[in-house]
Amino acid sequence: MAQKKSRSNRATAMTGNQVRIIKSKPHVFISYEREGEIEPLYVGESEKRVWLRLHNNSKWKIMFCSGPIPKEYGETEITHAIERYKGYGETPGTRSADSCGYLILESGKSVLFSVPREHLANGLAIKVQFRYEWEIDPDGSENLLEPKHYTYFYSSDIPKK
Image 1 (cartoon, rainbow, N blue to C red):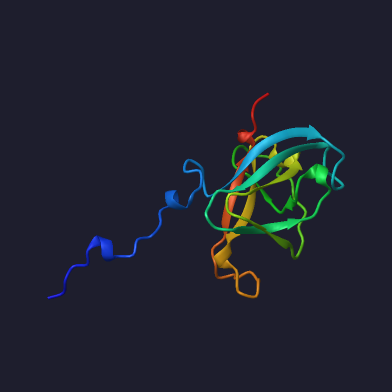
Image 2: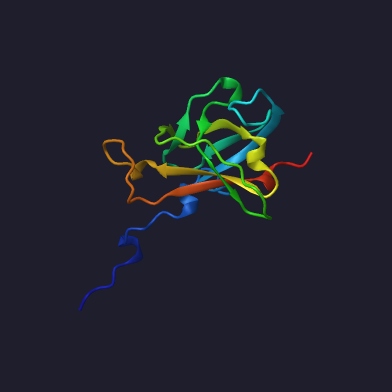
C-alpha cells in the first residue's frame, strides 16, 4: 500500500505574493511621474510628454526592449504599443524597429521613461512587453516558445489636474 505524502514533503510552488516585493502591487507595473512640454523627440510628435516609471516589483530580473535617448526624456526609451481600451477613434502609431537592445532591470529597481502625450489620449493605454530572466536562451537570444508578458498604463491612471 502506497503511503500518502505529507504536505511538508511536497515541493511547494511560490505564490504571487511571495515573489512580490511590495505585496499590494503587481510583479511589474508602471507609475505616473509627471507631464510637461519639451521639444518633440521625433518628427510628428507633439511637445507634450508624460514621464512614467517602469517598476520591477518581483524577486527576479526582467528585460525589455529599450534604446538610448537624451537624459531630459528619461533614463531610456522603452518600446511600447498603444491600445484603445475605451471608446473609439484613431489610435496613433509608434516607431518600431526590426531589432532592439534589451535592458535588464534588477529586482526592486525602476527606470524613468517618457511617451508623447498623444499616446495616452483619452481611452488609450500603452503596453510594454517584458520577459523574466529565465525566459532567455543561454546565448542571450529571445526564445519564441516562451510566453510574452505585458504591463499596461492607462490614460485614466493620469491624475486629474
